[in-house]
Length: 183
Ligand SMILES: [Mg+2]
Image (tube, rainbow, N blue to C red; front, side):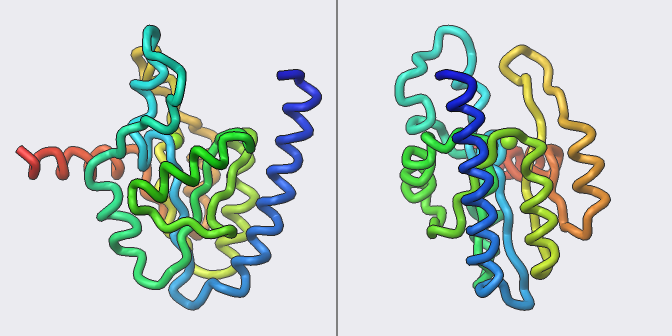
């Protein structure tokens, strides 16, 4: 895809996120909002990026990470749920379908796709201004190359926000506990 088109679609997705935050402003009560990343948080994404894996329907066929549904939307109560994901706008339909299939509630305001990981900060700040935010995100990359790396600058900025942040370790612990209880 041409870079100019990619940039234009990225801008469009950020405009949409702005509209979604405004829609949410009417819905967020005193209990606040639950914000969830998708890749390597709800979905076991990195194995799908290994060489030799058929890229066709990759996103549609992602396995859910065990325990994550129960730990997140299972405890959401009546809080709105937002999926804040570094994915392309044209991946919205497959993302929407995957979430629904895995039992995650999706509404017009809840699927926020951003063109870079750093673009998560602004909506997080806007949501934190509406009420308490509980946020699950691995904020990591590169697993498929054999070494987990972190968006450390982003992590530091999230930690500086008034947000209940569940990081890579919290996600790993949740998944390990769920896998342990399956055995
Ligand atoms: Mg992720």
